[in-house]
Length: 575
Image (cartoon, rainbow, N blue to C red; front, top):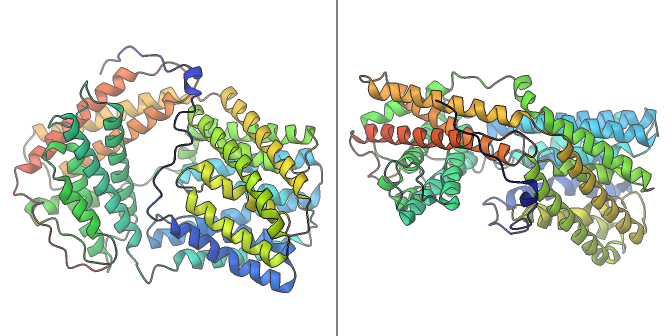
């Protein structure tokens, strides 16, 4: 395809907008799970240390306990592996920090090591898609550990405490498995169905054409609904493909796969979709009832063969996934280091607060980083005020200190899905109270240092993001357009030829849907970068339009078979 004339991106000044940055979203469907898991993982070690009179060791147990925040959206087999890697990653970062702290007390060296650790943690978490909460919790723990006086002889014992708490966090994360073993995959499938239904409703409201392509009158809301739908479908596939293809759980997996296929079909042909049926299927997936049945037809076997064919593909090697993240890692290292140095220059006693603030800012592009900087500053400053109100109660005794921290821990995880700044309102006073586990700290000094470090970290961290440009963003858009074009051509050849091999059309269609999803995500990410070359936005739009037309044609080819979606009966598959 010939390249259209690239168009210039939005000017940086227009991207420094505050509109919508602090707007509250609907809470996550499982907001209470990470909140309860966090409390269940943190409370026993802290209460045990309180009973032993060694609350000063709580920082090490919290390093392991906070691993319970991860992997709540993954099937339990995958969750077990992910949590184990998170615990090992946490221990690795803490080990480096404690050994460094035992060998030197030079603050500049400690900040430098903390910045390098933050960059490694950011790159690894993004490459492996571990999150939320991603690298921020890992960086917070390892950075704080750098500034705790240590001796080499103490390091093994402190690591043992973190490992024991990490093992407990693993058990907490896996605890729901016996009660609802298929909960994560059912939830991911329901989200895909609901997102497809929302897009179908939006299309009807704007007179969307049968082809599902983006017409000239399509607004940002409709484009966002379609992107959200495809993202939810891709997330559901990633969840289901992490499950075993054989054995006792295979029947559940295949029943859910049929539902995700229906969501894909709805996104490709929204005008031919019954949104209420999709929502009814999604509602039936809640709880532990039987999985809805989409209706048997000869084409179902081909669809599932198309799904099984995807298992042959292996994910790209880790080093290849790390390559595109080099600019983000460089931003993190530079921004965290400069923020820590600036805090030291101002005479702040805890430069790791500024370092962690900078580490928490970095998102997929500069525009999103700006939004996170605003959220971080607002949340932290509001949290400092909340600490001023809570501190008198917490200082009445160590038991109340622990209980206040647990309450704030729950509040942070319960609120952060509404907006990052709202969760930070609870995270900030909790972090301030944790510093008092080892002994009383003057509230005024803590509040002043935290406020200054927040402002320093946000300002310096954002400036580093502006200075370190991501010149690879434009190349990645070109690559994504090429991949989408090739996937479309592959699907079009199958449609133009005789009857394809079983599962071949399904595999090609799903590959095209994945390529279009990646194209949209890549284009959105690149559009938020500054100082880069102009992006081929017209090529992106043309590739999306042609791709969605081909997807719709594939769906119409399937529609020539008997109706597979007329039934709302349930499969005889129990969770």
